[in-house]
Image (tube, rainbow, N blue to C red; front, side):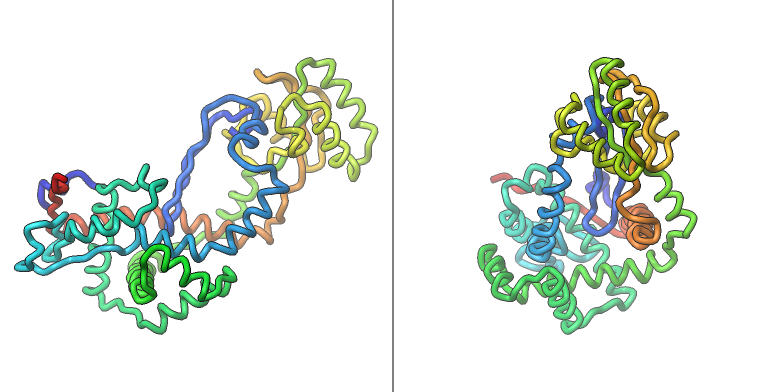
Length: 361
């Protein structure tokens, strides 16, 4: 490889830290905030209340295909290469083996990127992404990996059907972006070839065992809390709540959280913190909630730097059997996300790659 390419590419009361996760597909990652403010307050600042987020998800799903289309066009398999000897050789962004990525095409594609994406998709990122796409497509060609136009069309139509997007809606979006359907199908085709290559070369042996799925499921708890300034207030609340049956406790707990909790988001979500795992809450809170069984409430106030907590451990929103398929997919995606950079690194080490400075404007 040439020297020119050496540069490659709290949760609420109590967020106590966290970890980053990645997934193959669109590549995604998150890291937990180290801000030690009340967890529900953090949820309110970062996310919508649970009752509203479900409706938003449904709306997002409806237009998922349009978002996917635009994302693929922006950062998908978008490259143009010319053989050596082309008139474009005087203006190239990079050379991958014997294929040239032209500045003209990089500039054309970068101009398509909406302003809000340019904060993290720089021209350099686009060039490096394109190099990766070229490496993968070159390897697919070596391995004889192909896909038919009918297969591409079928995948696109299936995605549109699932998202309830009409052809007219898609055509309108393409028109707004000055993109033709043939171009879109070509982009989808390249992505599907890459997916097929990765499935064939990398992902065939990737699995998530039942033990791994169950361990992931059991590592999380679902809880709610009411935050008080004084221990006396928290003790009084516990005394009130003890009078209710196990069946009635969650609803009464929610009512009290909405009227008395000092956590500002308590009014919106009834103190519900959602599901979380160890390491995401400050230690006193974490120790207390993981010691409870589902349906149990702390019998004494739990003191933290935020005040005094009354904690109720709630049932998870979905059972293990209901969650099994999604968890297995997520765990497999995590494993795949580790394999892909390794595979790209291997391909790059076997290739001749040169990256050239962007031309001065």
